[in-house]
Amino acid sequence: MNFSSLIFDHANLLVALCLVAVIFQYFRNNPLKHSRWFMLRRFINWFPLGMTYSFLYMGRYNLNVSKNALGSLMTKEEFGTIFAIGTTVYAFSFLINGPLVDKIGGKKGILIAAIGSSVANVLLGVLTYFVVLGRLKVNMVVAYSVLYGLNMYFQSYGAVSIIKVKAYWFHVRERGVFGAIFGALISIGVYFAFDWGQKIIELTKAGSTGGWLHDLLQTIFASNVKVGDKLVDATWAVFFIPSAIMLFWVVVDWWLIKDTPEEANFPAFDTHDASSGQMHVELSTLDLLKKVFASKLMLLIALVGLTSGVFRNGVTQWYFVFAAEVKQPGAEFFLKNWGFLLCVFGIAGGFIGGWVSDHWYQSRRAPPAAFMCALVLVLTLVMAGILFSSPLGVGYASVLIVMASVGITSLMAGTAATDFGGRKATATCSGIVDGCTYLGSGIQSYFIGHLTPGEHADAAQTFLLLPRDWHWWPLFMLPFAAIGLFVAIKLWHQLPEATRRYNDSVKAK
Image 1 (cartoon, helix red, strand yellow):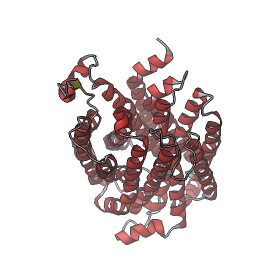
Image 2 (cartoon, helix red, strand yellow; image 1 turned 180 degrees about the vertical axis):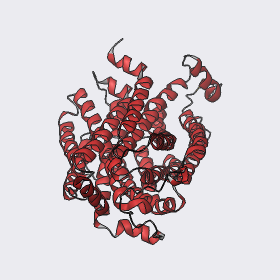
Image 3 (tube, one colour; image 1 turned 45 degrees about the vertical axis):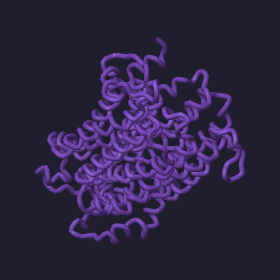
């Protein structure tokens, strides 16, 4: 058995060990000397919340997995447009959902996210069933965009809800590590989406064989499903299964999650973010939106988030398509284990960024973000040079870009927006920054989908009258990495005033 097979066969165990390592690091990091019960109760709070968020990712990126499985039924241009519309809906939903979650709390927000996304995934599964069986003739872009947009609207409640709860339970000096945990949850969710999703596709293929799980899924989803006399692949299962898993976590969340330490019978906890001393102030929806759009600082944080969305999903989304379309001799390992690799390198990026921020830069988030943008800038240049000559080099560059981009997302949307927005406005601020991340994702999805080679012989030029070529893939991401680096350097010394005072008081002791 070679190394690739060993990883593939034991990926679930290795991801479980990564999760154990994340939990170990959480309990190990206690700079404020919280009691054991506080640390344990906070874990009981964030773990189910985090697992729900991870499985929301499985119900988000299953579209990517279904694209390859559907083959010619969904072209690259159609997929790029559908994904772009979904991510754009996600981005602008925060104008509504951010202030709403700031009002209703993170617990209700995550329940809305999981229930709504579960229903949307069921509808996507039903649509896929009728499309594959040829019983429904529809415009693929319109039909999938409407349902995927609905899914992404509810998905947008997820990130703001987990960050809203985090804001009340984690001090600013602990948020770097929570940012790392946030990055780990994103990465584990991407693993569920790509590797578990791909496994679902394989287990529900017509005529395939396997063990008890294969037989169970075949019985539920693929028993005697035919077009004429021919059995068809039950691709729709990749939408139904995440839906069921999310509903399980809805029950657990309803039972265990508390929005604040006070609700769990702990004393009031000052996290020394921008809301310190202002918790009595009631903010209207307009006040919450002004926290972002009237603040040059928040807009710059959002701009870094947008650039990270371009290259994070630019690689997560398109390497999976590129490697399936352009054979990668000697580097098949990357495509076969794409979800696992995204998970491991994403966790690494989140922890590196969070640890460096808290331990080297006194909880300033911009310096590690700047280093990671610089790394992406170099790697996109390298990828453009070796795209068709070094499959291994392209694979390694891709996972390193994912590592850096998850680190940046964790630092900007998961941490910096919370620090500067404060507990009262954290859902609005982090939501709009995360929305900008997905706005960046939508931009790259549409443009890269139309700049790279099409599936039809007559698709020789892009809508910009440029020759279609896979080199546009890394080259499109390159200027965004440069912009992210420039803005992160401008933010280098920024800290909320309450955090600065707290740091000064610690140094004085």
